[in-house]
Length: 435
Picture 1 (cartoon, rainbow, N blue to C red):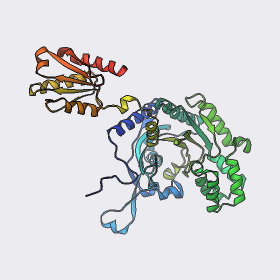
Picture 2 (picture 1 turned 180 degrees about the horizontal axis):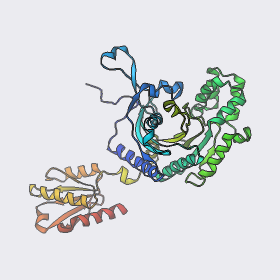
Picture 3 (picture 1 turned 30 degrees about the vertical axis):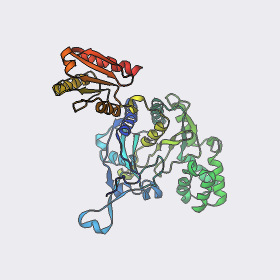
Picture 4 (picture 1 turned 90 degrees about the vertical axis):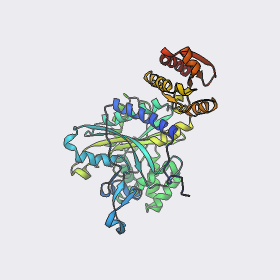
């Protein structure tokens, strides 16, 4: 028999999984749009040269490559690759369609990406990202608005214990220079530093040594990165002034009080040029991150365009919300409100008509498709669908001009007039929800 499990690092999304994802994505989309961001979608795969060289050495190794097809298949060469993130495709879109886009382009994008990573708890090879980016301005207002949108999303989802870590790539560069780390080793140092949350200070020190960074320089750099305030190490530095402006402006948004300056925050992707940010939950870790990347679009366009963005990890958020039981009951308990059941063949048509009326009353209605000579089957079906009520039609109901309505929690059964059944059942459903 063929294996039935999906490929490692991927998952099948069953109905409850999809409902959770749509709930989170719906809140993300609504907030992004209220902040003036517009939707964008890009292809699942890109020309391989579009992606290579944009993420650093480690990122390049995690790109899923697609081999050439047809007569070129035997060459073993790749000309396409699955999308690694949503930022590089955005940069390509801006370069390709610059004449059609406004000077300040604000977009959001909710689509899957793929990484040839080692699967782990909450870490997948295929996962969704929820990105916002603003293209065309260097103003710290951009960072402040992005942080405000992210904070509002997490609060609306029910998170109360998150902080937004903030740092600056130029601060990192200056600290590495001051510590004596050679410029050619900065990229390696930042890749190692980005793992601080996972491997700790000693682990980063070992990575520094493995990457050829002098012990004294590495130790001094680590002492800087774990300092409480980077401003004391680099007084008057323009990057410190930029961070101060972002914090002040973000104080006018839902991100107020959430921001923590953190010199150890690195963000491993090599295209960041300015402020970098990450949202973290105590005991859980990162739920997303981003930063300013003013040079990336220039790789496609030939001239730099300022840009800043943030990516929320949809899967990570869903895992945490599921473990903490943060989803509303309407998301986790049931796909329908009412199951319509008929007791004889003569009631089939009226069952379908009643279901149509219930849907017109904004209820989610399903019809059990077989004659319910015994109640066991429709009751089991209604329970599996998470229905709150069952509407029952049969010969007796037709004779009386009624519909029997059964509360599937209390097992109480009442009768409503068939002529006004839909609004009456809708009222029962609302009371059931409120209780």
